[in-house]
Image (cartoon, rainbow, N blue to C red; front, side, top):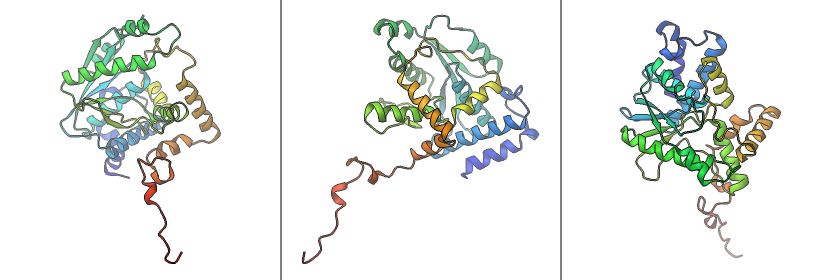
Length: 291
């Protein structure tokens, strides 16, 4: 167990003596919730440590959509910071994309309630997406690109070195299988990357956290969830098929998702077929004299 994970365990065990971040003041005081919270914190801390996400004094822009994952991300990061184990400044950011019937009041009221530093930005990307794509088309790709561009801009304006996203274990695995089945390549959703302009890091601290755990965490924390009526209501997405396949695997063989996410960090290049990663031409037997 690495240093930050071990420290997290010690801090969590001592919580009853030291209190908790205000976000957790109404959280359940049950053994089940405490175990869930510790597991999520442990997985998140492992990713932060393993992939070198923290530079003391940095500012992080934490994207929050109103979904269970981004709420969980923000709460866990503030919990870690409150314990003195995350030496960065956190700024929550919601990008209101102009979706019809989007409840604009929910996130600002929730963020204000817990005195969390934040920025709410309005950009009508909904109209752009629906204008560019035909009715019935899947909006996710274009919507995501437009959203990401605005978030990079906001990160720069706020002096942030990193954009922090709530993607989890299942998101990375689904991306891997989409690339495998439809893209003809081996690639997943990385825990850390640098944007094309080279000035903003993209961090995914929840990459080892399971979606079922985050769903239970959101339920226990009573987050005011805002559904995505733009793309969340569309059927037939390739990602939905990947999700169903993975869930079926997990049901038949419990623990497979954890094994698969660990496999993405345990690559044997010589046992794949990519000569850019391994010099197969150099892997030749020596010439035997006299033959």
